Length: 158
Image 1 (cartoon, one colour):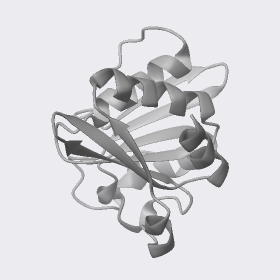
Image 2 (cartoon, rainbow, N blue to C red; image 1 turned 120 degrees about the horizontal axis):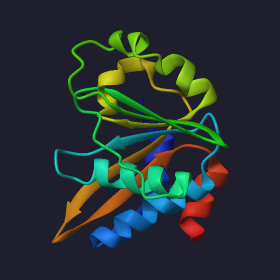
Image 3 (cartoon, helix red, strand yellow; image 1 turned 90 degrees about the vertical axis):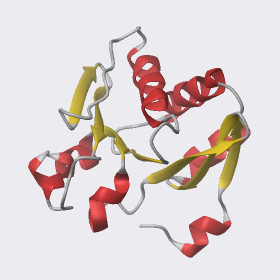
Image 4 (tube, rainbow, N blue to C red; image 1 turned 90 degrees about the horizontal axis):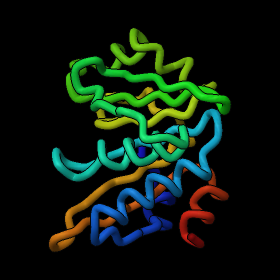
């Protein structure tokens, strides 16, 4: 759910290379806390899974195998800081299927990364950070809205 006010204050970060997308994932991981939800938007091939992998590996502090949850729908990773839920909702046909996955609990207690968040319908957390990846020339950019104000400020300062 996007709000007009959030769209006015979008943070736009250029990501000309794959390494820049990896760095953004690592930066987000260093700033995230339990209860944060990151809605990863963009077309197929935009880099959503790449960003999620970078986030998860940086947060775990190791080169973890991070498969795309396209068929499992959700992958859960645990460490000393709590759980990270990585969801790919592309295959969902109705927003109410979100509850069958347990995402309602994850939104409260874990860090969640959600690809294809449009499938959430009205179930997206109000304070979720929307991160849209868009093609720009040979690279891409991230358009960031919503989320905690201190998180967005830190991303802009970084």
